[in-house]
Length: 137
Image (cartoon, rainbow, N blue to C red; front, top):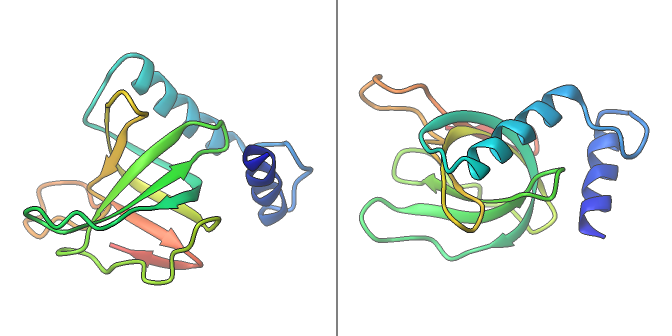
């Protein structure tokens, strides 16, 4: 049911017929699914999903805002957004759409997206999150 609602929302947001995914969404989902099945880590990915669970912050070492995103394909990812380097998404709620650009790391639960922020030393591609039209990096 959530997948249908997610696809309908994505279709509504882009003014397309329900159930039709934009090519970029399909390509992003396919790249993440391929990385998951091949147990690949360390690849830069972009995409969009619906927040299905807001988790407690991880305060061990660098602080990270954590939440689960469900992609249009149904694949789920943990987002670990460094809030020592980038602003927290304070208004994030379950059911919200979040776009992302970051690094995918494999794990058995679907994977983690991190590096969703700028690199203070300028040696790594800057990642970001977009929520309700605002970019967090």
